[in-house]
Image (cartoon, rainbow, N blue to C red; front, side, top):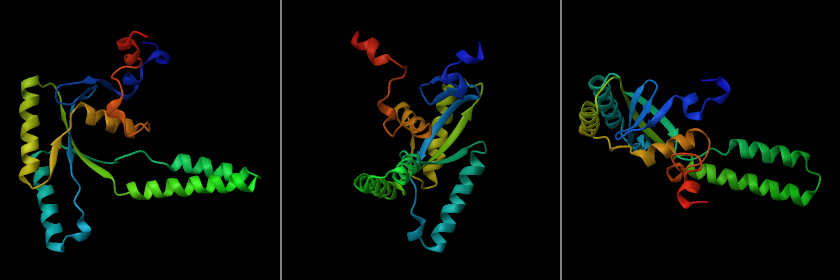
Length: 188
């Protein structure tokens, strides 16, 4: 394939969604959303227990990967753009409006600053669908047995994560699987 004609999926190594996760060039990925714990309200002893339980998960599933992402999009680029516009602006009323927009974005970002999501990711290489299913259930069971609130992520959840990661929006779960898919379905 000519380098200039590669699809986005090729460039990031994603093949397709599977029944249990995401098929990539490096094997199938299974995603588990783990609800965060506010450790600022826990005692030192309870924090140690949480850490020990996490260590048990890591030892039971040695190839597990952990990812922490923002739950929604970041506004830093928008704020930087508004700030540069404000610095160049000569009209005081427009400057006020731009400052108001910057403050609004600050409020939104502050409200969502604690909106983090934690994912455990397991790679499955060379496994049949039944083996992936068994591993998927086993991993979820191991995590939940250590008192972590866990949910295996399904296609809409994974799409939302990819959309936020690639700086699109938090509504990735509403996006079509293929560009232009909605136009094909509506007959436009």
